[in-house]
Amino acid sequence: MSKPNEILRDERDFGPTHFTLKIESYSLLSNATHGHVKRYESGIFDVGGYKWKLILYPQVDKSCEGKGNISLNVAIDESNSFPNHNWIVCAYLKFFILNQKTKKYLTIQEAKGSLKYFDNLRTEHGCLQLISFDELNKPCNGYLVNDCYVFGVEVFVIQPSSRYEETLTMVKEPSGRTYTWSVKNFSKLKGNLLYSDEFTVGGRKWNLKLFPKGNKSDLEKSLSLYLWLSDWKSIIRERKVYANFKLRIIDHSRLDQKVEKQVSHWFDSNQDCGFSNFVPIKELHEAGNGYLKDDTLIVEVEFDVISITKVQP
Image 1 (cartoon, rainbow, N blue to C red):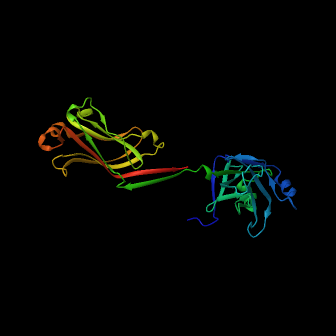
Image 2: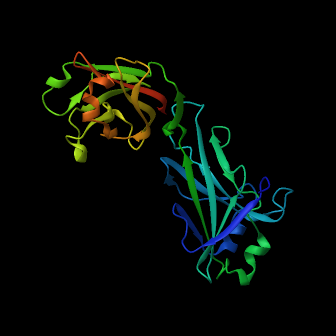
């Protein structure tokens, strides 16, 4: 595991995507930044809807914290327009130094606690002990060539105001979990597709979907029965609805007897789930089975588990 304030270093072939600062005649700049002017501020660059500056401290920092290192910081510019004094902008920072011999970039960032909070009290952040002056100036490292350095930074802004939060709840035995549908005049039904009235379970709207004479390869062989998510158009994009449920047909003469099948399914847009071969038509019409009484078929669905997804904002 990484230790607090541990510095992560790596190399990559391509430079910073947000801002590059090339300093020629660095020694002259170092001499120009002394006294009360100890830093160089770059021009403004835009990232994540905000204006920023890269701050270079070219003099060797010999303080207890710096320990002979030069410093690169990022400052959020005062020209940003904030609605009040309680503003805050969060960002991850990654700094770059070009090895001008290999054309590769040294990347430097803090391993832990690297999310920086910019506000009206602290507008500038950097990476402590970015790189020692001795390491920076070693000819074999290739960072200094002809008194020139190339620095850079990437600023990854975190936008709390645009954050989406998803909560998935798996609900066991949801309220109103059983829906019973009495299909009257069953033998006189016209057409081969029938929908129940709409009902609500788990905040979603459903229908039962019945093919009295079968569907697909089971046409004229079996009754087909499905659960249909009727408000599928309101499903949030790429978020499905889970249901574990039982479909059944009740025996009128023995209410504890039934044809029942259980299934689980993740519903998305325009989908149903069930069985094309739910019960053979011949078995359904046999008087001794009691599935049809007074030409009425009783169909039920019972939900055991259903998912409820909430998204904010």
